[in-house]
Length: 352
Image 1: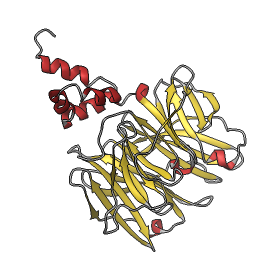
Image 2 (image 1 turned 180 degrees about the vertical axis):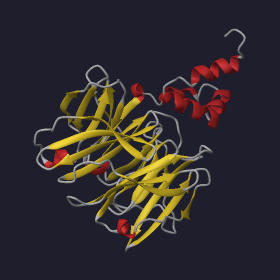
Image 3 (image 1 turned 180 degrees about the horizontal axis):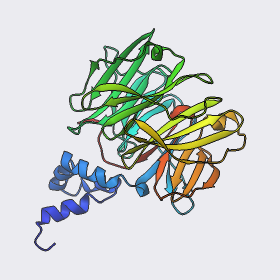
Image 4 (image 1 turned 45 degrees about the horizontal axis):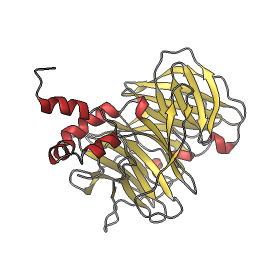
């Protein structure tokens, strides 16, 4: 360590600071401001920030927007702190569509505008344009946030309008939208299919596409973010005699799915994707009947052999599982996850 240049030592120390402390450190001197603003610093700091202890839960209701830590010793939410939106809104009409590396892609429901927002730094960027790009319609559109091989943060926007599907990509680097081709089955254009938000894992965005009735078709659409090619893979072989909900999550760069099925009783299975095929990791016993509103609010939280079934109000059930320890926390704190997100506190900026 004694042979390392002072600049290198400072760099190594600062990349390990919490995001809010990095923001304060920018005011120390011009040299530090310049250093902490470089893309290399932001990238390394982000890679060191994406850890479970740095996760926060953001929840939005009609009156407040709050952020809560996750308490590891009892696996529940910690005390909340209120967040003030830095952009104009009406009665907290903000929907969370996607999240990655501390950035949230959100929609202002009264204007349909898309924004990128870092709730830690409060910085945001409007993605809407005068030529009608960057406007989101609930139940028709799907959004995915990702990083390509050139470290450019991008937003994939799938739009269904009167039986016509359009796919557009926003680039943070060039601050513009462009159209890309998408070949898929015609029936997926129907509003009878629900598209999930995209989950980024291993250079691919994954979407669940589920038909809105019992026994309907369920598939997964994959988007390679570097070749910008789409393909379809099968859904896990879950029973189709009840409601089906598939929640995708990236666990240490391996795609997993929590597949919930049932009507009066609900069963939740955890699957992992190997190649183009799903392997069942574990199952939980049938969960006793719960209300439909809570059924749509389910959050799955797996850590150190315990499986926590939660809602935005807190723990619903705890199930002890015999499994290798790993951590996975994916929120669906409102139907399709629009009112909740787990994010890591980073200094990643929504604009260049």
